[in-house]
Image (tube, rainbow, N blue to C red; front, side, top):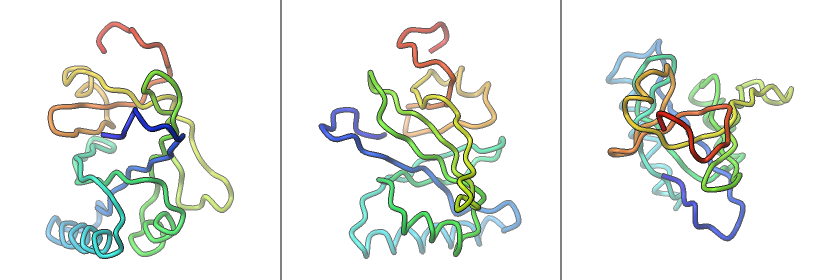
Length: 147
């Protein structure tokens, strides 16, 4: 999903423009418009599935971009984005940054890691990229049962 072979400490973000108050068609239209704008502006991204608070939605992974964060919060009224920062052994530190982040509000979630499908489905928030499943966990241990 995110490159673990980068020589630079890149920062990524995962977000969705889906809103629980929107109908499915409206959410897909917003998503498609954003995808077209990202392409138009040459911003690299990948579309994945996210499950947030047990609701499945299309999500986007891209390098962290503060202007894009402002757009996601202001134009698309999202409550939060997931920010990933390179840690070690291919793990990323995971932080949930909230819309009112001007006040610095965020929640450290631990680490973003690959797990098996069965493990991911036990969580109320996870990311799916093809056949790969990812969750946040408080441990940065490389070897754990169920992972």
